[in-house]
Image 1 (cartoon, rainbow over the protein chains, first blue to last red):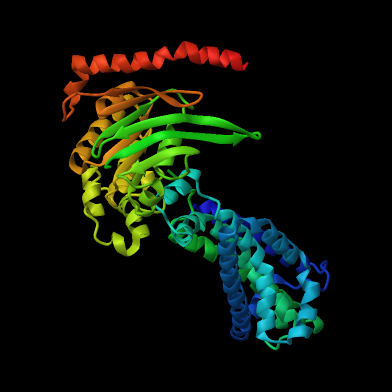
Image 2: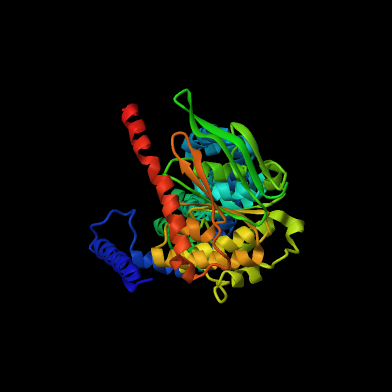
Length: 250
Length: 265
């Protein structure tokens, strides 16, 4: 990866932080904007407790992401086995993903209780659709000649899925996972806003109602960093697996 | 009956509510171990014929048998090797893994092949490239890999759909001699679609010349050139005589075909 890819964004962020620092120092900023340096100090001072709260959130996000991935895979195979269901499945998925989760989450919490399961469910609903679309689309990503090859080989539907359709879909799966990974963090936070005892979302809520502006911004920074890292992690896996370049098909 | 036999095979495709004939009353026979070539103008149904032998789709009428069995049975028993116009290798698999694919589909029955994938990779001249990805190979090498894959399950018949059509002339001749050498070892019955008259004469024991609209055989020629065929075969007066014969058969149909098109308009 080229240096410029890291240096330029870093420089932009540093400049923004410096501008904010100067703005607050000059006394011109609203009281809801703390000094970036004070936020960083708080991050350092309370890093142990913040990290343990983050751990709770990441657990929810991880469960939700994994479950959504498995669900997308299962539905993907079902659609592959019964191609006529594709339109219906994608429509249901689109409707489901268009539900404003932030409004529905409290209702789900009332129905299902303030449990880890509810928070994971919210996460699953939020990050399922990108992976589902990617899988359904990806399972078509092979050529007619490859289909004919598997016909001549007398491959079973399961062999066709496992040996042809699924491997062909992998580049698309990575696209879906890259979109879904940050969404999983958002889903876990929404879950926590609707009732939890621990987690980064709870830290945010408490800080907001307690007017602890520095703490709120610190939590926001952590959420941003973790979402970006989730995306970067998928990119890394993609690179290691050798799927970051456009596959040269033959 | 051993070998390949087609009797009164016809195929029509539905188009705008009408059945458009692609092949009409095609009969041909190849003895086991023989090499057949199908040559004819584009759109004469040669590839369609190959796919019916491979049971990718069924004829509208007529009968096909491979060593006495219908294509459905031959395909289900993994007795068909197919080489496509494009190599159609799976890009995420290495050369060796691509060659091994038919054995994986076979499952248990594929565990003890007559020739190992490693041996076939060597036979097609890809020794040293076992772990290369298809994208790292030239077009000719990719097609060699596809030929090895088509042969790995020891099929009764090898079907080749213009396998060297995308290669330049020199490379095509090289691949022709490679395939002659490989076939001299495996002795698999083969049927190849080609656009090149020289290729057909060099490779085949029997050439089926097709005409279009509907696709039909207008001439069957036996090639009595001695084997093994070598570069010197290309300079054999007999070779050139047969090339002329095939060319005449192909060109004879031209005025008719043009008339036919004129009538269509």
